[in-house]
Amino acid sequence: MASSKSRQRALARAKTERQIARRAAAARRRRQWQAGIGSAVVLALLVVVVIWKTGGFSPAPATADECAYTSVDAGAGVTDVGKPPTKDVVKNGVKTMTINLGQGAVTAKLDPSKAPCTVNSISYLAGKKFFDNTTCHRVTDAILQCGDPSGSGSGGPAYRFPNENVPQALPPSAEPTPSASGSASVPASAAPSESADTGPGSALYPMGTIAMAHSQEKDSNSSQFFLVFKDTQFPADYTIFGTITGGLDVLQKIGATGTDNGSPDGKPKEDVKISTLTVTDTAPDDTAPTPAPATSGSAPAESASATPSASTSTSKS
Image (tube, rainbow, N blue to C red; front, top):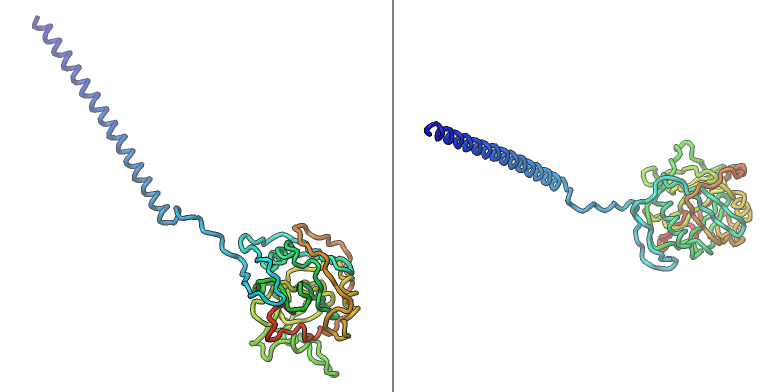
């Protein structure tokens, strides 16, 4: 009997020891699991703090405006069609501008990589049909100037913007000087200012250039532009935004017709009307033949209507 009771006690003790061991193992596993959870929580909190410190929970910043289109007061000649978009402005690729004149079509390749804000503005205005049924108000023996719905040379949209892709000024030794007859290759109003420090020098605008016209006021580009159909010189202060790819012969015929009063710079003798002006994202056909450059002559003298005055603050070259 004694030995039987001893075995029972031994079995009971062994069972108790096994239960204690299982409880201890379970407690160790629970402590390990809790420690793991605690570490994960601490790590997650650290990550949250780092993200918060670096602005990760702040709203995504708005894309900065890329073009400065400044509003102008409404007035005579101002046509308000709003302002172009200023975010996500296209800065690559090629666009085609097609100008349908009564005398024929002129096509041009626009380069957003060099003058993105200018091309953006021209594209916007073309989409608003801003140029349709407007008259080109100025012609010389080298340029045709268009883009003013009022046809006066002092009109444009209700905004202005700065220069972009201006040409490099010629070295002083390359700038033309008055001839013995007293005529000058570059007119006084288009030549550099009294000193090199007060204004831009002269630059060559080759045949086929398309550039923005503006007044003497700072950052006064608007809608007016000029098409160059013969090599000429002006101050190095006009944004070049495209190249003519077709229709130079049309422009040269308009230039040959002259002005309505016989002066070298003024309103075309025959009306030059833009029926439509469009801008598309496709590249123009560059295979069209280009007329040979005309003999280099004097750059046009600025006419009174094309010379900015105190009362005229809109675009003119």
